[in-house]
Length: 172
Image (tube, rainbow, N blue to C red; front, side, top):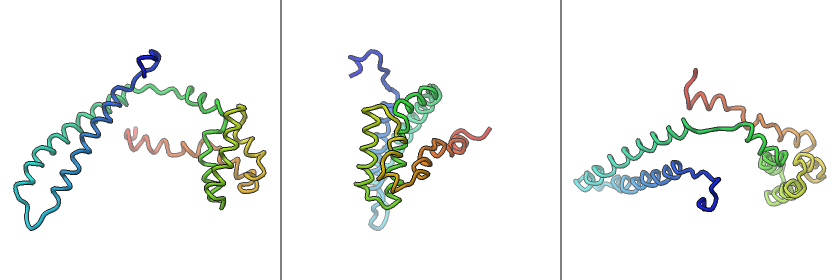
């Protein structure tokens, strides 16, 4: 645990949010059970609604306020993120390669084995994932050189970032 690792920062607030989400989800079952009506509503519904209505909404309001604070204070280090991605060059694209192989007609099991054997070389020998794939005749036969190279475009994963940020945080 973190008590043995003083360098570690516990995500206390986000762990708390996970617990609060459980409380809000706990209101779903009684709310759904209130839906089952025979002919008309009776007073058995109101006691449940009086409890879960305020409890769930107040808890959710508190959780959203806390989450807003977490996001406002979040520290992001893009250079560190890129450094971490480059420790094992290209390895973050393994899922794209796996999907491309299956879309090219390779079975999921065979595609997984092809990607894994090359990924393990990257882990063990600190080589470049793309170079390993380009040297693998089975992968090249399935995807071609251009097909492999196009899977290593980081822009594929970031192309909608501006749109997402505009939706979440508003434009301008």
